[in-house]
Image (tube, one colour):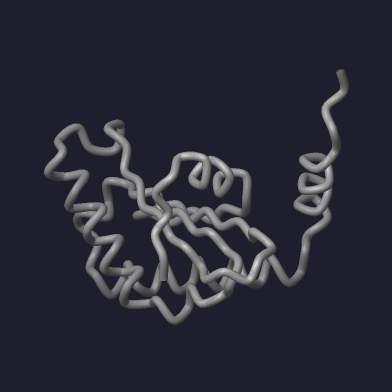
Length: 130
């Protein structure tokens, strides 16, 4: 799986579907191409003031994503994991199950295509008045 490294990719993923868990927020956006799935990680200073803690959160999230990599296999998608402070203390197996459940929830939402999400997507495609 490839990594997201450019800010505009993170910003565009923020406009996609989101699911929150205690240790992270997962944002997913369908790009509509046939390239492999990509993933990015972010932890803000608001989450942890010390760089050591932010880096530990990021490393734990990277390892969890690596452990469930087979579930990220949908081509043409971008995923962003935003770390939260509890990611420091939650057991690794709980993080794995939370990430698997979050991916399953997003996949179910994508298949159902709820009306509010469809309306939001259509509104984003409309040209701006001006």
